[in-house]
Each structure stands twice: as C-alpha cells, then as structure tokens.
Image (cartoon, rainbow, N blue to C red):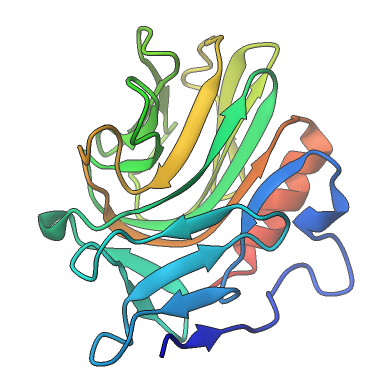
Length: 227
C-alpha cells in the first residue's frame, strides 16, 4: 500500500502562507501531501499534491521517481535516471511569481518545464544563469550578480513582461530581460520530451498569477524558513 506523509508546513509561523493569496495557482508544500511508492521503494516519491488546488505531480515509474529526504523534505532528482514528476497543466498568461526551494548539484537541468509543449522551461543553464523560454521563442537569461547556484531559494517574477530574479532573498540586477507569452508548466525536473533532467533537490514550489514586491518578500521569508 502507498504510504502518505502529511505534516505541518514550516511557513511563517503566525503569519503569511501562500494560501493567503488569491492569485495562488499551486503550492507544492515542503513535507506535506507527499505519497510514496510501495516497499521496497518507500523512499521514492509517487505523488506530490498541491496544498491549494487539485494540482498534482506524479512520477511515471519507480525508476523515474525522485528519492525523499525526511529531515529536510527535499526531493532528490537523479539525472542519470531522468527522474522527474509530471502533472496538471499550469498556464500563466500575464504577470507571475514562482518561488522554489532547491539545491543545485550540477548545471544543465530544468527545474520547472513542460513535458508536452515545446520550448517551455526554467533551466539552470550555467553556474550563474537561469535560462527561461516561453512559447518556444528566443530564450532569455537571468543571472546571479555574484557567486554560483547551490543550496538556497529563488523567486522569479514577471511583471509587465519584465523578468526579475531573486536568489536567497536578494534581488539580482545583472539581467532583467523582457519576455511575453504564455508560460506553460506541467513538469518538475524535465522539459519536452524527458530532456535536460534536473540534478539536485527541490523542497517546495509556489506558483502565483501575480507579481508584487510584497508577495516576493513574503515568499522569500517562507522559503528562507525551510532548512
């Protein structure tokens, strides 16, 4: 029988949670609504259900299922096995905000993407760049002002088609490109078709159909609270 792990999210205790926002589209919450494969693969994730809607991420097979670290609630993705999860289609036509708690082991992998539509992804392109592609148009890069990817948290916003990256709570100003179109997301860890698998771990994903300084601040505070 599949096992279910449900626990209280860390959140901003006594304060904001993503559910407070009317623009919340999906919230794959740390340590919450995670269902595992049958033994002897009980350390592998089968489902991850959003804490807000009926959005759900599903592993296609045991081999493709990411492993789970109970203390941190991180899902570990092995690119050699093309580990990923797929689920409900999310389409963001205007402003959006995406927050992710993650640990990047190696570059070249897609964190969020679409495994059914061409040219839709948020990819760790290099040690300092996040590449974004929407509607299969020319990709643009968001770049760290200093340092490299590692264990931390990112927030990507689009407001009036301007993309901005925050890393570990700090706004990055090296590149603020513009990119219009409908951002389609239905997979965690790959893009179409099972390409550029992510190498690292993911502990929480938040998706909103709006963008504001206040929202970004609240997301950063919550993601910072997740070990």
